[in-house]
Every structure is written in C-alpha cells, then in structure tokens.
Image (cartoon, rainbow, N blue to C red; front, side, top):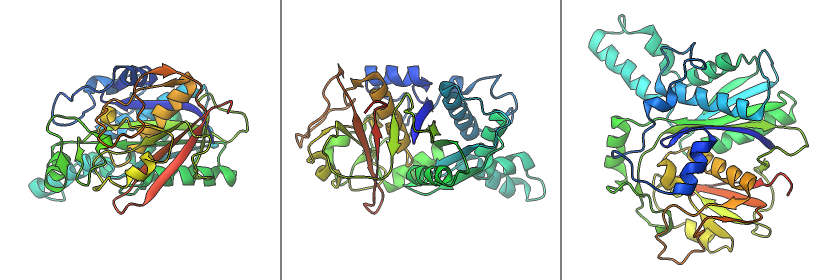
Length: 344
C-alpha cells in the first residue's frame, strides 16, 4: 500500500510542517500534566462548517483526514472508491461520559439527542465522510492496544477485494481529567512530563496525550511520495535502517523491547513528542514516513540510555530506505509494520 498523503493534529500543531518542526526541535515539557491539543489547532471555519456542534474527538479526526486527502491531491467528492477507517482505543469517551452524566442529572427523557449522537464511536468517521463528500465504506475499529494495526489489515483487505482504490486510515484519541485520573490509579505517570522510552523499564512512566493522524493509502503499483507500507513480510533485520519503538508507558512492562534494541538496526522513539496513546503507533508511522520522504534521520527526543542501545543520536541527512515500527500490547502481543522509501 502506497502512502499518498498524511494529515496530523497533535499537541505541537496541525499538519506536516508542525510535525517536522517538532522532530527538529525535540522534546519539550507539556504545559500541564498531559499533552493536550490546543483549541486553536482545531479551528477551521471552512472545513468544519458542518460540524458546529461536534466534539473535539470528531474535529481532530476530521481535520487530520481532510489534510491527508489534501496532501495527496486526490479528489474524492462524490466517489464510492474511497474507504475510511478510524482506529481508536477509547473512542469519544469524553462525550460518552458527558451523556451519562446528563442522564444522571436530568433523566433519560431530557438528555440531549445531539450529545447522544456524538457519543457513539462511528460519529467521527461519519463526519469525515460528510466533510469529504465521500460515498465509500466507513468503519470505526476499537481495540485496546492494536486498533491501528487492525485498521491497516482491513484497508489491505478492502483493496485486495477491489472494494476501494484508496483508503483513509487513521487513529484518534482524546484525553481529559477522567482519563488522567484513571492513569494515575493504574499506571505510573511521569511528573516531569518526560517519557523515557529506552529505560525498557518493567514499570515505565507515561504522559497521557491526544491527537489524530490519517494516511491516504493507494493501491496503485506506482510509489507514493511517502513510500510504501507493508504489514507482512520478513521480520529479519537485513536491509533495515531503523526501528521505531512505541514505548509509551501505557502497556506495562517494556523490558520486552530490549530484544528489538539488540537486533542490530539504529533505534528511535518519538512517543515523548506526542504523549502516551494506545493507538499512538500511527504517530510513529507518520514520523517514519516523513523521514523517508526527507531522507533525514531525526534524533530521538529523549536519550536516557542505560542499556547502551544503538540510538539515533542526532539529526542527519542520509540515504534511508526501510523503517520498521514496533509496538507491544498489554500481553506482549507484537505489532509491527514496515515502511519502504518510494524508490527503495
């Protein structure tokens, strides 16, 4: 599958220029105890003109999806050949809790139907289809730690079955006081706001984050400008330039990543830039695609390295052909996919 376009909304801004700037600047501490998306990043009267009452979750997803299509240059209005898949671990839980609070306060006969309609997981992807005027299939996939990978599998299936010629695949997560409270009860939070991926700790620390990222995937044989993404193939290290490790502190014991760190290629992790999200591997995928496009290594933003892993220590222009993104779930189930340069 070729990556023809990318859209992103995260705590450092909206769009690929914001992502590239964050990769160049490196880690900065969050302004609060979590990484939040500023309201200024999701204000767009043109794109969101039909979404005046939509929640933050839907707006982030819609803007990232729109930007991915715009980046590709593809015209999708009125087409049934575009599929849209949104992956999320928790969906619009903020709106869901708001709806439940309203039931408790006002009774089920007096709650807002608008809030209810936005509390369902498929609301965001419906808004995306409306915004893009797409008539193709849409689906939301929710799985605690593997949703983005499952979305890639489904996208490939739709293309192989000729259901779609293009598929928008993305993820979105939102964070508020409720999720932060749950995280404080269940996992360790980094009080200094710094995720340290290369400690490979048995009790890692996390920093909750939020945002959305989307990819416009093309089934054509010609290479996309960001290269190709593969979810199958050889798991060896021959020909690999880099591993991107999704060490975010959310899934418990991260000692399992030590084996990957010893495998041979250069390693990095950009989770300190985005914050901890269960579907955060999509943001790592965007960083990998941008590195392949720019033919440039970006230094790991946090470089605490007691195990002497082969870290990417600095920014450097160099030939880059293949990057593999790796993530482990709560039960050490492994998820990996490989990005290859457009001319690789």
